[in-house]
Image (cartoon, rainbow, N blue to C red):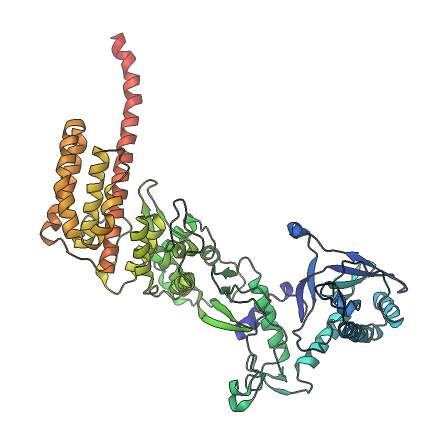
Length: 595
């Protein structure tokens, strides 16, 4: 809450007035400048025209119970116009009608209290004349519902935006949330003696935090039952927070959960909010939370991590800091899942390490590919033939990977078996899965598991060599029989990954028939593939493992992918050399004919 309050002080110009919250306006009560009449303007829009919605910050405070008090000036039609609630069949009970008039009377009282205290604003005087004459007088269309939000204006000015209205509303909220008495003490947030809150005035907006259960507003601090508080104390007795800090911290939370730049909503449930101590924008941080980060920005971030600072720069301390707050929702309580408070250079180093650990070399483009967080989580889901099934990713995996990235720690232990299960079930190894697999192995405590982003010809790891061997055997088959419907990968990949000894020896023996065909049709390819195959097989033939652990299976798959990408790069280079030779021959042909 200290960090939220500090951030709120920095972005005060971006926040709404104290105890104001963004809301959609459904109706506008346009009061005449003399206050003698008013007309109701419809601002409801169909669901397909959301861009035309009228929305603005209006007075707000959390309220509950049966005899709820009114907001100042902007409230529901039940308060502003006395419109009662209707049953499903359209009928209105006498109880609901009486409650609507009670609420309307309370609304008029607070509106008159504000208007009577303002002498120099003609808009306030018009409102006083209008409400002093009795219940609101205007034609009520049939489509006005009790829950619709109604705002007031006189001429061209919104009444709730007047400074006098904002000041009175802040005083009203402090009186309501102070518990009825002026309790002062030491605020745990700012460390000063001030008037204290009895309850936090503003919860996080309903629907702002994704949740698997029913959506609700959420409180960051709330003690309702004596069993929950120290010595049976409820509300904020044991967690004293002043009015200013409580209101500012929650206003900042609501600002962050609606921000496109500083918010990351998880696909299953929860949200992560982040900000920095200093106001300068940082593209490296925003890039990480982007759905499609720019590879050039990532390369620059990794280079900055690898370049050691000069002695003079190393002596300087960067006072900037990185903050991240991961929140979930349990009924009406916010759950703080993670809190990060680290120097900004440390946060950048963790993100650079994250990209460096999962980057995948692309043999087609000759560049390293990096993947957004959501895609690394989704690749553990089910493959549907053209894409991953949207909701098939393991629940909570994206949040766990985010924790690993920001803290620079190992990914969750469950990620590797989940990923291997999907690889075997789908018979698919694509770049996102390869990237996650490389990340899991590069963050293993065993240095043997750490693998390069592209082919490592010097590696003597049996599992890695087995993967390379299977890739070459597959290339042999593809070159000899290019149009097969079922390849070696379709039939034998899973068995080769689990038990390479039996499978690879059999496939190596069967490759003789393919080489015989290549010797007849493509002798150059036969020589190159045979040399490559025997070179790898000779390194592992005496030590073919009978069974591979999960980590070894990961090294097998990476070895397989590295060899495949290497073979692709060789074929592409050969094609380019061949295409370059054809124009050269066509240019020399006319000279030869002339001679």
